[in-house]
Image (cartoon, rainbow, N blue to C red; front, side, top):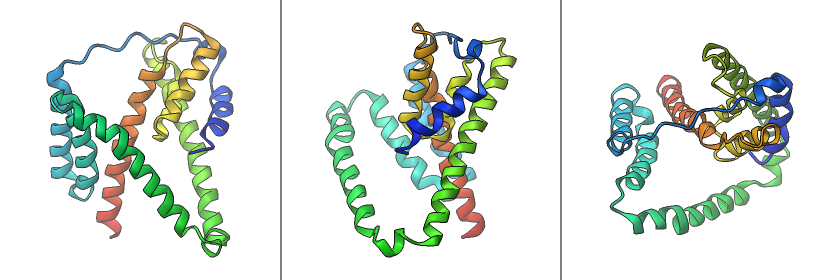
Length: 202
């Protein structure tokens, strides 16, 4: 994830034309409060029905979304996105760092996994940009292909890179919120696919 700003921009530039990078996307439509509240509930119910093995992860993701969008628990929202987020980030860092011994890291299998992950990240970025290029053609130039990199679900860094590159080529371009769409979709999709794999392979 830390390599996202180094890996993605060259791929995005190589796969898009100057004209495509200049595309200005329309302002996103205003979403009603009812839709914002229904989205996490419906998504959780669908995952519970079709992919129950992914339900825990998706339900927690959607619960956080529901708490935020409900607008009735502002103190809880501040705590979740502030102190609790910082604490959990610290705990994850400590647990990963504590288990990353030399025997585990300096290992052929581990290095092979890192190389495979890097390759997957490059292919995911390229695939996302190419799909966004197809959408650009199908919509008559309404989709900027630079948002395709956000399909790798590197939240929020990938969206920032879409914004930075879009602004670099066209200062009136604002792609940040458009790029958050593919990021959220890929995050949900990744959790569902992981649940399918767990149910298939145990």
